[in-house]
Length: 475
Image (cartoon, rainbow, N blue to C red; front, side, top):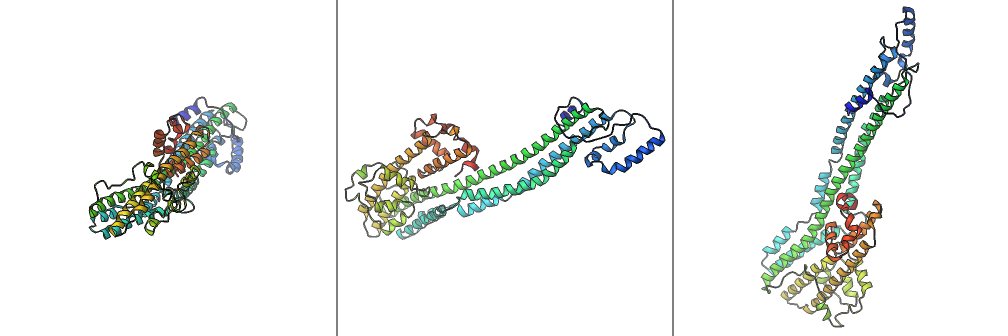
């Protein structure tokens, strides 16, 4: 870069504009001693009025004149020196800015670690206790404790106001703003210095006007370029650091969500294995949460069984999250229709999605064998509830799939600006999480499997943007 601009100054500089200041034409011949003394006295009186940039750039030598007619060459050399100095200052600015960014975002790892300690569910101790117990009483205690821990984590996500990611992103915005202020404290003074570098006063008598103008244009273009480069660099490193840390935080939150889902399944798996051992249950007594439930059992229910039914205390505890307790206790399933199913679906949350119905079915099945082990029999009531839950799982998955597909096929994502696109992605993600799809990769896979025309939609062509901008599209 130095060689290019120096060549431009010494060769054929490009044109632009800048306000010019006065400078004297170098003296071509020696004056007699009297005239020279008078000139020297006059110059001495005005010496302190010279611009700082002119003095610093060697302009004082020009002001006093040369004994040889080589002023233009001197100015070219002076400008080359300024370019070298300016590029070194820009390089130093880059290094300083990187260090300021590193220091400014230094608190992110501890913030992430604190979130992990607070929000990452470790179900392993509970699962271990379930596996090691040798009594039905011990099983009930450890099984109940496991789901109590899971429910506690779920409850942390059910609150008004900003979600975890928005809170963490606000923390990042504070870091970015503070760091930007520090970087600008370094950049702003350099902008003033560089403006001074672009300062080439013309000769007093107007000599070499064309050459001076070209040199002025060249140094001005270089100064403007470096100012732009510093501004772009400042924004680029701040945006990059923000985005990278937001991605780390998004991954931590996704892991937190996944640990809750994995915790439910691990608890059910260990519980079925242990209760089967303790009660000598048949080998086929196994979890059903991963099945696609049909309507066979629901079709066998009588008109009386289809009516609302009040849940006992044990089931009320199992169904305390989500809308299903209210649905079972208030809805006549003989009259349920598409409108009611859509209403139920839209009342779901990620903490109790359609995907969780299978977990609820297994918990009811476990409660059934626990009740029997303790001398009570609620098999008929539990069987009716399980059949209704199978119906809801089947129908709500169908309802949610249609909701999701309608959002996809009725929107041209390629014609939306960023804010509009983000809003549409929010609605799609909101519906998808009710279906148990908690990532864009899962959404993409689900649509490919359930919507044959998906590959022709605009969403399939832009969904990759969510991976490129996790700070923008994470919900």
